[in-house]
Image 1 (cartoon, rainbow, N blue to C red):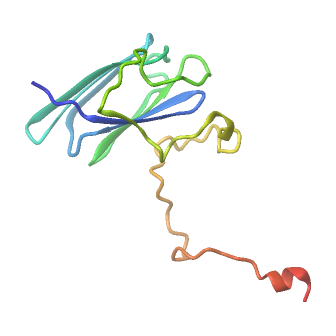
Image 2 (cartoon, rainbow, N blue to C red; image 1 turned 135 degrees about the horizontal axis):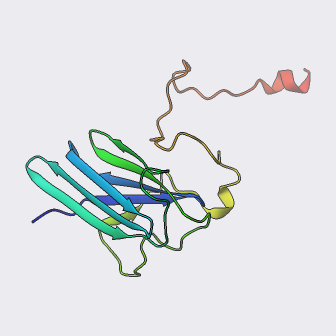
Length: 149
C-alpha cells in the first residue's frame, strides 16, 4: 500500500503551483492530462508514495507548459491552466482532503496579481533571496538630507 504525500497548492490566473512533500524521492513519475487529471508516484526510504488528483478545471497537455523540479525535500510543479481564470478550489470535488493545504508562501489573491510580477519565469521561487551583501539590513534613506537640511 502506498502512502499519501502532503500537497501544498497556490495559484495565479494562468497557473497552479503544487509542492508535493516527499523527502529524498526517487523514481518520480508525474503525469498530467488535459482534462485536469494529475498522477504522481515516487519512492522514498523504501516506501512508495502516490496520488491522483482531479483538478478543478482543464490544463494544458503534459510537456507544453508543465514544469517540475525534484528537490531533496519535495517536488515542485508549475501547471499551466487551459483558461486564464481563478479556480474556487484545487479539486473538482468539494470533499476536504487532509493532505492538501494552501501554500501561503506562494499564494496571491486575484486583486494582488496585478501588483505581483506577473509572467515571471521563476516558477520555482522558494521565497529565499540570494544575499546581496547587505547582511539582511534594511536600507532607510536619510530623511534629513531628503528634507534639504
